[in-house]
Length: 184
Image (cartoon, rainbow, N blue to C red; front, side, top):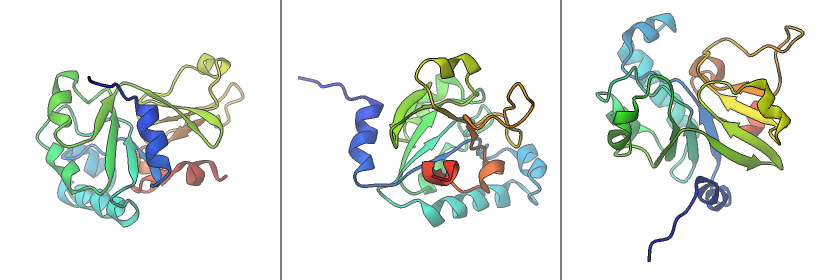
């Protein structure tokens, strides 16, 4: 008999024995992104992300990567094998759906979006920021990527604290915990 286990159940089990971290938009192997991020070249860009990641993520830690692993290519998925811990990917706009099986050779799970309960709060993990109406339906925070160094603004044109951007540029290329992101 086969049993079905959800991401939420996996996270609940792992929370008891590990640290949960978040990041987005590594864009491994993407030369133009490396230059836009002020790296000498793509090799230094990718190595910096690997070094930063492995400086805080340990074997039993869970890291949610919120999209854009590469730039629509499978050729750099092997870099994921050099990253410590358990890796769960929320697919981004540059992650090709037909590459999911290949991606699963290098990560533990792939999803379109994930809803978690962290510190008593409802958190949605997505690549692209959710529509503001989502907060009307039992959602406290949206941890996302996609917009790189930009932030989501509210109607008063101030940063909306319900949106937490974790693109590599926003987190100093180092996966962060929920507590670090929310300053709880």
